[in-house]
Image (tube, rainbow, N blue to C red):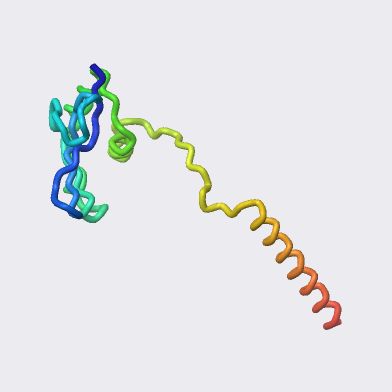
Length: 123
């Protein structure tokens, strides 16, 4: 049986509240779980101590038994320094495309030419 440590959503509409649970990976997100391991309230400020509450010992036990944390839970555990930081591939989505880069280079070249022409005219 594949066990996952994941978030189970609770709370009302537009007011999310999550429970950190150990559940069978085949069960639905908000369905049956084996054990509750903590809570996560994304509505609280990031520096609030009650935003993420985890039972560290239970989580360590489940990981030792072979439970796999989801990406979000893994980030929580990394920030709590329980798991080592994992190198992630973050693609540069905000980086402009090839054509935009070429246009920017042309603009810079024209600006440099204009600045050089202005210096020559000033001399």
